[in-house]
Length: 135
Image (cartoon, rainbow, N blue to C red; front, side, top):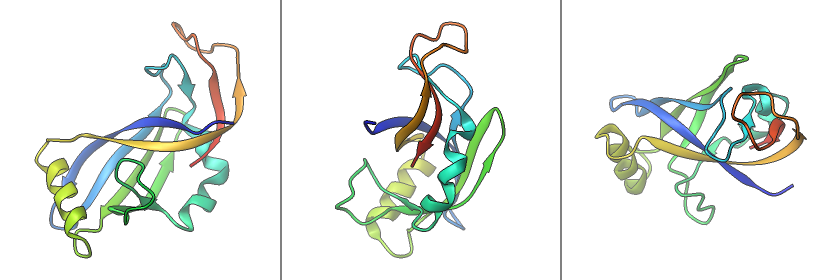
């Protein structure tokens, strides 16, 4: 299946530890009229956590700006704790400052859906439901 992107809300940055909390997905209809189930990423999260990099703007040719430290899943939300690589990279330090200053508040997760349901499960949903996906 084709790679897709999902907006991630950053809930704030601790500039002393360079860590942040972010919501990757919630059980809601997104701007593409799809639902990405919060537990969709759970089956393959261990594979991602072997190299949990956070890139800027999906640019895989550039060094990462951070990494995922931990994650949590509920039926309603998939959240992460991340850490900016501000001690190792001037660019990561700049990106952290933009989030800490409120100039940016969203990330984007690239993922590949591996199991979908074409039947809507939420009011107003016109697209698919993504049941499993790989980050």
